[in-house]
Length: 207
Ligand SMILES: [Zn+2]
Image (cartoon, rainbow, N blue to C red; front, side):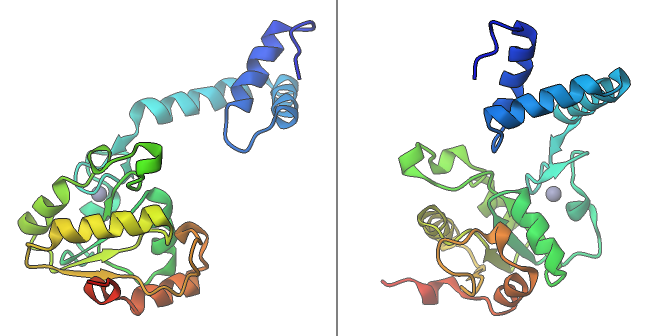
């Protein structure tokens, strides 16, 4: 849909919305026209909130979760079990696991998965500091909770090899979730059960 003949300004706003995931050109036009009908204060507040979010958000220096401070609320919480770390892809999985209420340990957010097809190698993720954390923080168990995709499997194995020389138990959530399902979309009961029924990672690999 080109609006250039009508309004370059509208076209620019539509382009901005259409650049967001899941927003087609039609929805983008609807959103742009919606904003136009609102009070200017509404739109100014809306864009200011986004600016503040982008400018002020941190990544926790310990677990790399999204955070308002240098350390996230989970890392700062003295009530959490500091002997176990759960390795996840992103904050979406942190939120999903937190919703189960069945996990009280810490996290290590990778910021993605190893995916040679997409040119994402281990160096592009927060992996290097994981063995360091395990040693310095005296971690007894690392629980792998990545999605059951090829990229998830590749990453699981990479993390396992990275931690193999260390004195730490590496476990993986039970595969109650069918292959290919993203962890984020698993219901809380299924996800909770797969955390409780976690198994040693070494028992899941063929040597
Ligand atoms: Zn943290």
